[in-house]
Length: 355
Ligand code: AHM
Ligand code: MG
Figure (tube, protein in one colour):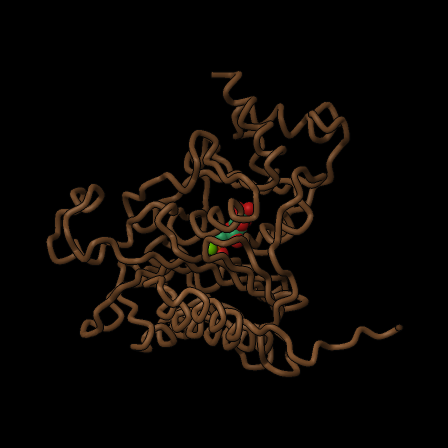
């Protein structure tokens, strides 16, 4: 057989969630989650189409208004558009979504004040957007929390002074509370990779039928890889443990006894996706200039860490499990190292030895 036959009745993302809902009807989240995922996949298809047509429809470059997000980053046209697409998609009441927090919004926002919000969604609408004008892969990262006990006081709310914001700050939850997370990667193919806490599933958008089709069931990360992925230009500011560890990967004096290769796209979704497929590690570590690294805990590190753990990997700040970190602010950054369990554990052991 020279040609691969197409499955006549593929397992689409929609069907996957319908089936999961039917099989677990007793679970309280399952139908709501199905509705939420329907909104997210629709938004991602729309963003995929915007990204692929950016050069044609004059969507490359920065916002004409010169708008800047709360983190002082100039917003690209596609950042703003992708944020709007997701926000509107999630407004659909069926999903009973309460609060969303996004890289492109200064504060968490209530999506529909009348809806009895049961969920909190966090997302980075278009991660890696600085790469867009060069045609490099980008992605959407999302996480969904079941809202914590209404708006009652909790450990992290105690830190918030403005009373009316207390409820909205229900977004400040540790990654261990996530009920679902994932990413959609806009690259040579458009892939949706997600977890609902039962392993990791990968779907590829089939442009011929406009549906995400299950192409990568039950993804597990290789126990060890041969690739490390980090912005090496920051190495003069790294701590000595990390510096020595990366050196051992280059010269093959690490536990595998083999020299590693280096790959760094500079687009988190693509770098994490490669790490998930091929193994190895991806890091945005702490350095003397950026003590908390660069990546945001709530909508970049936590969702990716949940996914990596579900695939059998490890995700750490170098000091603790990422999923255990309770955010103190929406746009907080944390150092991140994630990937194959043997690779990440080897680095962690070096940190313990040095302590
Ligand atoms: P962004 O959210 O502003 O697009 O920035 C996040 C991106 C990640 O995709 C990537 O891992 C990282 O920034 C790369 O940073 P650097 O250019 O410092 O290596
Ligand atoms: Mg980002």
